[in-house]
Length: 271
Image (cartoon, rainbow, N blue to C red; front, top):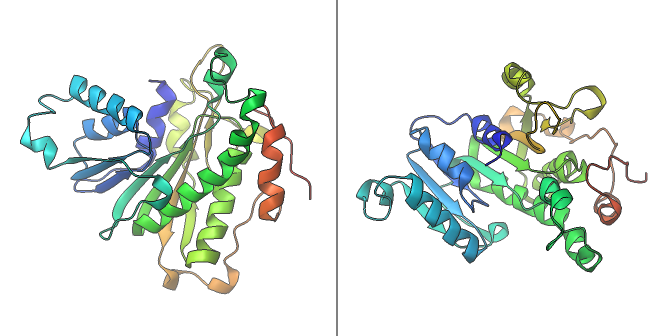
């Protein structure tokens, strides 16, 4: 598990008794870190891939004492096999982690087998940001007002990072009347700057934090953004309009360029 992968769990700011959803949980590393804090009362580990969920079960069996037979885990850990876009829950969650499928930059530049940037996978790659946005919107629907959603990827792509957060904020408000605000976590993680190389200045995301691989700090890439679902009464709805450093863009203009983007490409979509 990459050291930077722990940061989205820390960004959840777990509290005792939290009801937590890991919407794209497998293979389970982040859920395991959350469980090791002993803070969540309940954690639901969901994933759309059955084979990846089997890996999650093996990891839990290896690292959680008496996982298969212990009653304490049955009362605390629930494993779900549902498409995260359509996941539903009546009770809602205090915290939701959305570690979405992405282009997985580190794997893409080091392994040729099944590489997402292969020409025959271009259609699949085109759909990634839209899937990510749908997952994040659903997470905002599932979290309770006042609760936190942490969106994370392992890519440098600004479209899959800030771009998806921007579009999800807009879609959640326009389609479901859900308001959310971004919490700046830069000061919280500044103490890790000697260990992790965090994006700054031109490389700094607007909506989150970015860990950039470096020779002296070979962690990441990893991006994460903390969103708080806000009670509508707390905001002036006439003033609520998500903004992005690229300006307001239509859905088709934002998602279309992703096919041409390589690892870490920071080109801006056309206005």
